[in-house]
Image (cartoon, rainbow, N blue to C red; front, side, top):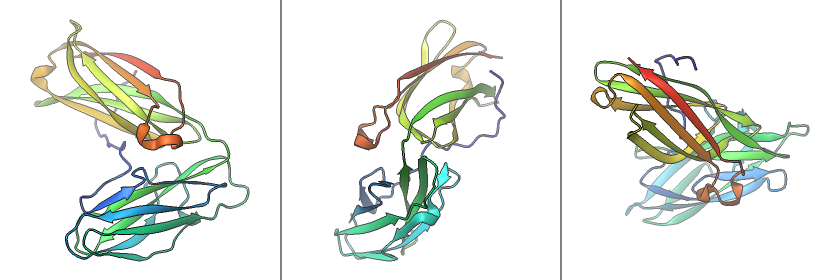
Length: 237
């Protein structure tokens, strides 16, 4: 594989949480032609009155947009101390829309200037399917660290939301890095792993990436995909 340019963006996490609010479902809302409206359950963890403004905005380039389809009933929500509220969202899906998954965001912006909460909204039209593909990999050394870079692409008409276990082994087969977690790929996404240079001397390195779609947090909204494994050999100079 060819080397990826050094400038990289980390785009695998579409959902930003904040300390003041808890949201159920935690993954946002999935709507469809059969279920075109839904409700988010919100709970404030604040000990004082807490107000948020409700905004809808596009999905920052993550896949096909449903921004113009959405309607949010509430413009503002006020919470008493540690109280709960509901946020109602509906979608008007245009006739003739192509099959696939569309997405946008609902943003809750606190009036105290603290961190905003971005909640993803997905609208599925017809049959949806997905997969993930590693399209590029490379590594680059600077004075302080080695940055491993991986470019992932969504395959199919819906975002790939799965798990990934990534390991890096040196030429002797010793594991020098391991990480595991959720991975969300809308269109294309990039991931980087940065390790101190002292841990990555010159030589050959083997990177293994194992993907599966067993996302318990998504429940029945997860799209089943066959597990997929990649092995990449890189030479560090």
